[in-house]
Length: 246
Image 1 (cartoon, helix red, strand yellow):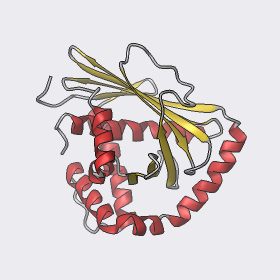
Image 2 (tube, rainbow, N blue to C red):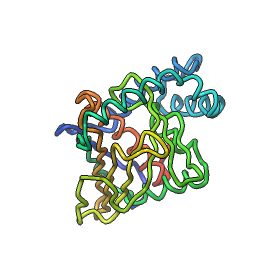
Image 3 (cartoon, one colour):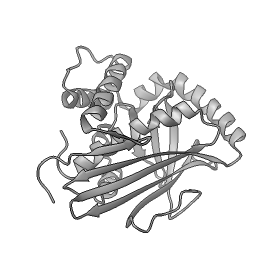
Image 4 (cartoon, rainbow, N blue to C red):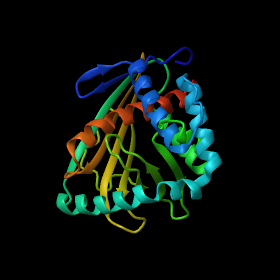
């Protein structure tokens, strides 16, 4: 089912959202991140804008990016501890569904893992303007620094792949490919959240059901806004997995 565009549609809060609408969100977020990172004269085209941001992040490197985001990371870590304590293990779900005609959704998790294992950070950064660092550690944890949708602060998250882990979302047997991981705010801390992303190829295309489990005390507006972050990054990753990335 290769060839042509994938014609991806997102279901965000019960509303059908076109690919162009998600790209418009990406363009707005990219413009803000360009200002933060000092990208001069950013291009208007979203694909060129995406490339300029990736180039700038790679040019700065991990050390400079962490220094630039240090204050945000300190405050988000403090807020995260408070929110986790108030949540007492309960979760607030953030879910979107993507459907596409043509192509494969099931190929996406392997595309991500291959990029993570080989250190192809450009492929990981390109998916969303709010990605700053995505890398694998020697302890098999994935370290992610990103700005969650709706949050004013970048946050550091450690993902540990797991068959089920602490995820409260049940696996749907209609989706043969499952990507499940626990989310922690420190490399040695307990899980405060989780992800369960589910993928199914169909005769005419694919369907992906994407769920992030935030601590229950996370402000609802952050969770609602993060649905656009999910729609952006996974639409881009699915296109890349099918050889259609810009």
